[in-house]
Image 1 (cartoon, rainbow, N blue to C red):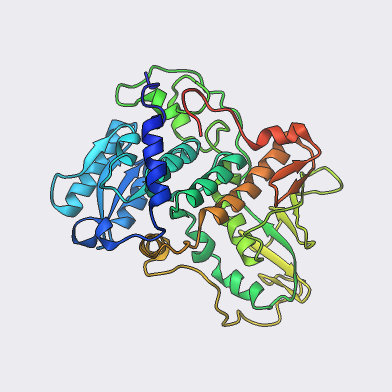
Image 2 (image 1 turned 90 degrees about the vertical axis):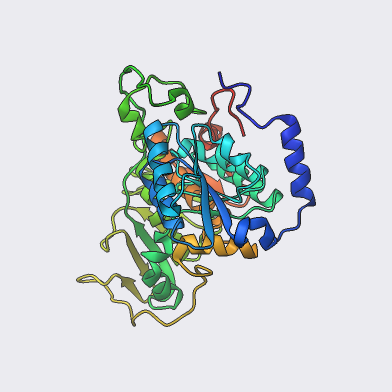
Length: 404
């Protein structure tokens, strides 16, 4: 049913590649549509996607033109929201994301689908000249993240990941640690839920208002069950809490320690090599643990103190220093940062390279949990060292006809 449209045609791909190769890495304001407004298409209009769309529609220099969801109720609700915002009936509603990413009048794409769709939709959008804002976690596998980063660079596209909490929730930690309040950071603890698992739910009849084949897309075929739509716990569609809130919380910890553009050199699950917690070891000796902290989502220990302070612990030597740490550009938080960078062609705060590095840490943690074994990681080559069985988990096959 899908094979005729499942991937970009060869002619369409070559046309997009030629255009990308010839295009400068800046965008004229005239490319943004009438009245110099950016235009956006929104894909995946469930809870988070529709919420993000509502946030973007508050910007006067952006206009949403189209929405997409495989569930009829979701796309009709999203269309009604857009039409109400602009006081017209112009928003187009689709059930297939390709109808949006192939539209020449759309500049930017918002992706709020389940995780297993992020890479394919993002790459198809970027190859068709779109800039992308993609909800976290941006990837289902490590290899997807590197492909997405490479596509963004090859086609000169802006790609912002969707973790607003990395800066919004944790900038106090950033200022404390980067400002030297605990001396040299040595250890961190990050709290979030654990990995996803296989889905045991039995099949049920498919409701008439959902395209179940399209919902599954590149994931292994499985019978419909409404519990699968809450995709987060299931390994075929997501990395669970490790990649969901982990994208926020591990992202916050990595940025705090200025390790957000690299990765660990060793990953050790609990019960192995004397570790009681999942532990990431970095080349500079820093150790980062999953859970076990005392400060809520994040805790840090340095040579001169701990944050947050705890009874019996060594308190940080001063309050948060007034130091500048690069964060959002433009105005309006992470959404405004993305729109500003679309216009200026600067890299956004959650550039795909940074987002990929964070989700890689989460994926590596999941692999350690799933297999119950420690392994070495080369963060430069992005390779497992000396363990082919572990290395197999860096990617997964995609169900035909979908591919990257």
